[in-house]
Image (cartoon, rainbow, N blue to C red; front, side):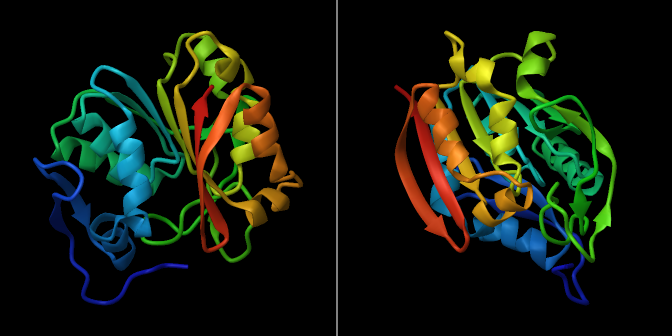
Length: 239
């Protein structure tokens, strides 16, 4: 589904609500306008996760989309790894990073899961809904590298994060399975911000309850959970 309308022309939009200096974003459709000017309908959650990271810390934005969260985290002085497998979203992400003259945002075109290989996300492109690995009808598909966080940290491609955002349209359980070593590490992430999609998780044949089982088993405690449509916004903190 493409969320756009005739007459949209690309413009640069300034957002001042989270960073007092303001952040700049390209906007060329109704979808991008919603993600930027309306915070994707998630202003409070976005503010919570960006305020959680301190200058000099490492932030993982897994499912970075056009970079709204990644850019605000980088503006706070964080080193950011932004994971976005969709090439159109990733292109816009790179443009937005450049627009804000940020130099410590590392953009990676990986889909995150519990194994290394290749994946086929389903997507509408940057003017539509977010891509997903869950089986979808009526959407285009792309091929992308598939990686686990544990594997990439073990090879030195990534450094250990202090704060993690995970919003990957149903692949949350598989991503967390691929982070078990990271979550058990002495220098494990201090906080995780999850957008959990139970219906999509079930399309993978996984159980949404496994999100809590993995994190509780790793010694994390749930400090906030709120419903949003068929999604859950969750904040987990290392105990």
